[in-house]
Length: 322
Ligand SMILES: [Zn+2]
Image (cartoon, rainbow, N blue to C red; front, side, top):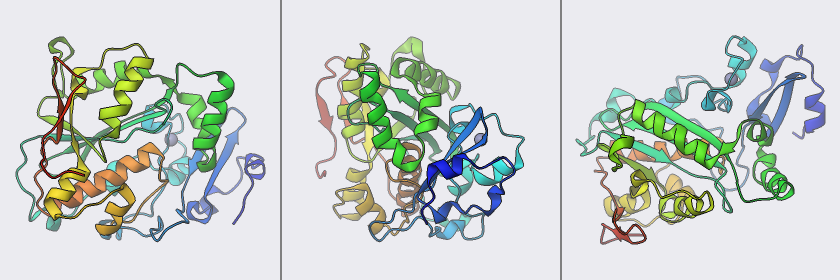
């Protein structure tokens, strides 16, 4: 079903939003009041065999999948008292990542207390920084940190084209423009968030405290963060110097090589939910794979580490790696 953005923008507040099924369109933006816009994205993932309309087993009895309120994830939702808004957008991502007790049977005791699932977006500069904090003992989501990031070394025109190309097609360019802040500000807020959860202490300039980043591939922390730090004229923070590449864990645990996130999800029979390449949705999908591997009995250990004294070198800790 094709619905033009213009026609949706014309919808008045009286429009019955509950009749709009997010699965029936690839993306749309709607405006409830002239100055209060919400972007809604719901990807159908029309290519490939994965379908976002299929719910995982653990969700069958819960509510239908809803797109996240991307203002809420960044602490900026002003519509928490609006039932129509709450009906249309998800404001609690822990619910869809909740597991049943039966899924804990093979769960091993882990050396880490928390996993910080991270999946950056943005090839030229980082555009989105989402982190899901998962408790290693019960695999539940403890908290979420999510920010859209405004590039610092890009002309206004190039930036607008970049955002239109990247987020316009999934209908979240408006919320990106409304909320994006500089990488330096994101890092300051992220450090405050980590300190609040006792994951890291600024004064000690050390690695994470019994926690590790979990990424799908090495690109996020091996390549992109150091690049962005250079562009943003920032020293590489010490907590970014080690991580767990889920692809390496997958290879060593299942003895199967999965090149990409979608292949891995397909092989684990986990349906892709949300918009692939919207960082927050990808992060949740990676968290689902993490939960699946933990449920199967995998032990998650650091797979790559930089020397704090010579951070340009990365040491890979698994012999078999992707
Ligand atoms: Zn909201």
